[in-house]
Length: 508
Image 1 (cartoon, one colour):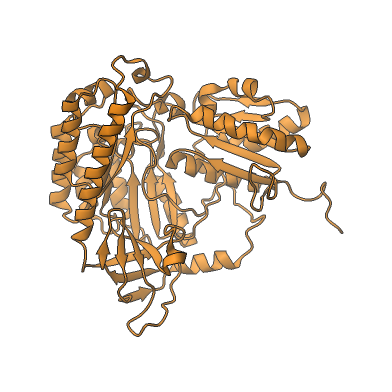
Image 2 (image 1 turned 135 degrees about the vertical axis):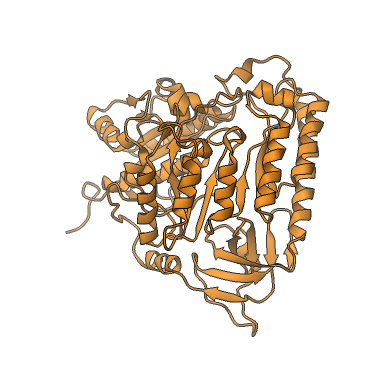
């Protein structure tokens, strides 16, 4: 029978903005849509130049000041596209939807569905309800009813996956709106987390990233302040799980037990993302960050004592209201002492709805810019020095997919070392022959050059270990992807981003 528009499955596209929590939520939105019979649109874009998706979903972020402008600009582009394609639907979810609620359909009446951070599982039903009723459906829940990990999930990688251990945040940082949008912290039971990890390993995953707004406060809901360290150790007992990392902890909750668990558990990566935000005690107080410079540096010292090769990264905000030159120099001092292997640096921008947005003494833009440039120069210089120290060292890499944007031009592949550093390597053996490796396989290479943001190996590959993850990647790339079935409630596969994208929003 010839396929007609009425019998062909509807297509979808999910566009994601913001932090890794949103990336993971989008994996679930994708899984939900495919479970409901939708298929990915081929090369869909907002201009109509490629295939136009029947459903376009925006998973939004409310962290930056211009987040709403970005959303409404994109919605404006889609208005004319939708007018030319009867039956097309547009849905808006995520943090901005939670914040703006009915405002979205008022400003963009061509939007069909608005849903919040607590009810992503409602998307297919809301789309169908909007189609039948021919009017917009807005559903925003105030609290989480079902933990998102029970939802269908379509992950895009065969070797690495996010695993949420909690959602929400109990902190009250004055620059951050996320607690108001994601709610109070809700923790999954350890048995549920470990069951998901084991299921992922059975699927071929060899690296997981434990994810939460504040991962090391895990256990607060069921009264065990040592729960996170116990969870890390339990992950160490799972056969086939080669790498475990987590993001992001908060300095106020970071305990010596977690440091011990990192040092004692062989598959926990020697990688730590520890958000600083500011090195000034005054600014930290104004930010309502419940630690001070001395405590932060003490954590760094204890991590380095227990794990000498740890690569430590951070988040820093420049130009918080009231920040003086002396305050800024305190931040520079911490950066010099901590020797971060990398930092996500941000110029402060107002988050509408946060206490900091109405503070007096907003720092002039030109001053913020000048401080920011000084900070970036120092961060990059230190990171470069630290990476140059690794030249000549042999490192073990898990071969990655899509992390080396210039790999095709440089004829290199890319992988992550056990400290999460990105390494670009030449896939040749000592005889000059091409080494056959797949994403998820493990290689050993010698670092020949350290750059500020990555390492390079132009030496022959020392060894190759083909893995179950590589097998899983090969099987997945050989199988058709369009319309693939997604099992209800079972985890699929996905690629965690290497580090948090935004400062003090979904994490830290």
